[in-house]
Length: 373
Image 1 (spheres, rainbow, N blue to C red):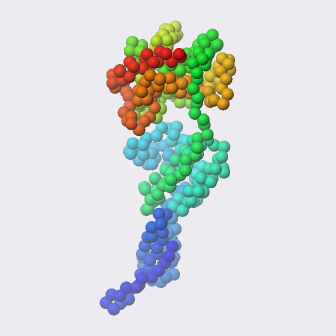
Image 2 (cartoon, rainbow, N blue to C red; image 1 turned 135 degrees about the vertical axis):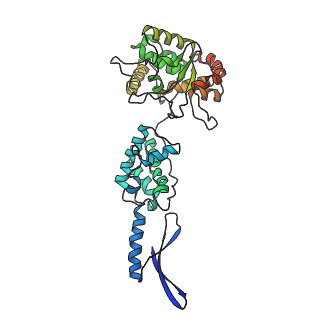
Image 3 (cartoon, helix red, strand yellow; image 1 turned 120 degrees about the horizontal axis):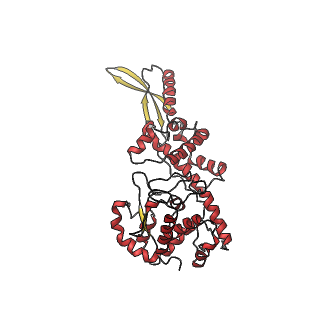
């Protein structure tokens, strides 16, 4: 910051005015008048006071204090711009913001080097996953977005480097391994067997399989309507993954003959109907993700399926489904069935739009019937 005097002459009278100038975070120079200052000493005091107050708005703790709080102006604004986030994500981002406030709260956002943020993650959170670090940077980036609303001059968001994801993608199972895994004689609990069998033959995510309800099965039309998934806490959403409560992205999945037969018998034998959940444990609760992961791991050992260096997890069933369906269907047809996002696929599927997918389901059903061959 610099304070200087500018003299002008008017009617042979010399008029002095004091100004202060400073550069913002985008390297632009700004000039402000020091109002009612008669001397340079007064101007310097004036400039120091107002410059400090101007800088206070860039303190990270001031920017972050009301962000991602329930019913806050910040969240209402995001929703107005079509960026509504679920409660789980909101809480996660607020938790990360609390860490940011604790570590960087007294830093000025307009002067904070990106390297300092990235170095902090590398040194203090080296054991966290790459996905968590990227969420940290995404949340940090929202501070820059917020300066549009709370600072005189917005701070440009930097291009953060992305951290590599630590997790390896799931591998697929062979035909022999599928037949070993779904040998009914090896399973102790038919509910767990059927849950994984539906996952394998319909390409479901584990959360989608956990939350299956009777009224999702359309036996006459021979398809399963995927209309939500169970979160880790057991709550079932009414929208699919990568979707929102407003943009649900429902999708129909062809029901192979054998799967249809097994599910229909299971529903009848257990007197299930309507919106009742298919799978509950002995205490009446929806199976937890951890329990099912443990069951799957136990079954791999029991069926003598050697993993080697491969990553074989419940999601491997979905990977295997996609790979095998691609043998006879186009990538676009498979995308519609399994619910993958795509830059070329912008519409989502609801119950009302199911007739448009009739040909896709018709083409996919014969392929689905031979997944284990």
